[in-house]
Length: 296
Image (cartoon, rainbow, N blue to C red; front, side, top):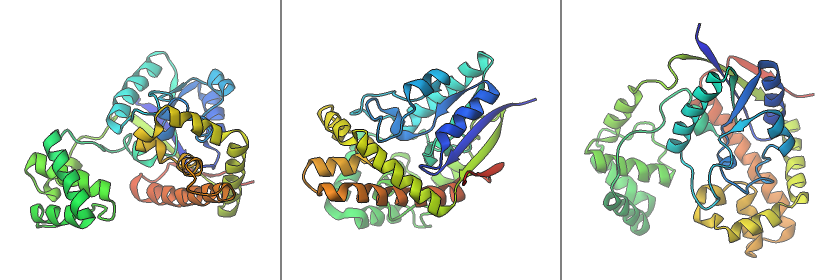
């Protein structure tokens, strides 16, 4: 009988942490975190990182991997996650994967990275096109290579378009050909059953929880945390600096927004993230084995 990987997700502020902790106690399990902002040391308050008591209660993996000025990408995560799954199972424990970062969650169900090596010269070329001609320049060059179309590429996302162009230039293949080859790659974790749980709450209740969470983070010292992280070079790592709560606090500390605007902006942007997460879960992840509404 195949071993089961238990995957739990839901939008920001839905209550994943407590649910996962209770679930792990029942299963004698350990947690693999699938939250991109938890990879970085020092990003604690704004990420609602598990407390010391929670970490002592249930072992967590894939958090605090890098200093805040060094990115931790999907390839590094995949390598670490595979090793961690094997380690946990070899010790006779169950595996619970939880978090709200959709792209990283998807890596447990589908291949999400390719093996194409992009040279520094090609990367410099794509960056030059974007710097001089913007998104339109990237799309014009990509369309010239991929005359049969761009498939399901998000053509409004400059980073995605730039990465697609780099891979076409590096491989000498059109985007549809690369997409077809990518879709035919073997599925990750083929020897494991996956039990996928999606946590939900009623919309208004979730908005209330988002507001409470944002207020609590600011009261707990988020701005002071970010002030320290600026000294540690958080701006050198866009993945960390753009995390909600952090980018707004950075803007405040730089005098770009007023203090009175900080909380409303964090709440607004978090609600925007919740909307994007729900769309991603619906369109990019498989149908959940179980949907659980946590609304009281």
